[in-house]
Image 1 (cartoon, rainbow, N blue to C red):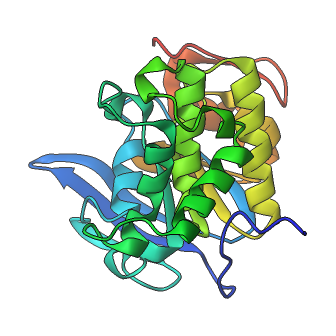
Image 2: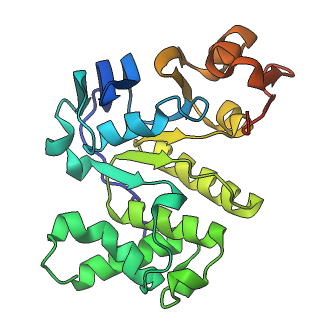
Length: 262
């Protein structure tokens, strides 16, 4: 049988629009006046130092935070109306890995929004979850407790949960952080598959080498939008230093050294 698409693809048009978006925590403005349009069928790398507002912007996109000014739209809709378009992978540190659930249970959590909180998973949901685990190479661990997994394996399980949501806007917050090379390569290959199927993949990352070579567009953020465009126009000294300050050294057009410890 032909392999089923990883995501459900919806009509064309902008996948995500940020229109003069500002987000604040009390009196602290975390994101200030961001405007950008993200198209389907692209991998967009969201770049910036810690504290630049990357996670804040992603949380506004999934509807966790509301802008103090401006608008966020997914396929022309507000985030609360467009939840069925979104697959979301949060940061590894935001998960309680001591919770006694299996790998399959975590993948099935990706089906909760479609099912409702009080509905039991159907056979089709279990199949979708297992297919997602197969995609990330974790089907053989389906009955393993998540606390027994390595960091790289846990990240793959989180990605499977996101895939089980079947959204065409795939949002990943630091999916490459702290994982081994094998896991990183597997994640990047899968993100390429999603892009090729027509999904928008929006990924925050500190891995500038991966961003330079695997992303179609880069959005550089340091509270304000510094630059948005293809890697050759963004990976230039002036843009990178405006984004990271003195923490970045440009070696050539494709490779940079970034001091994440600042």
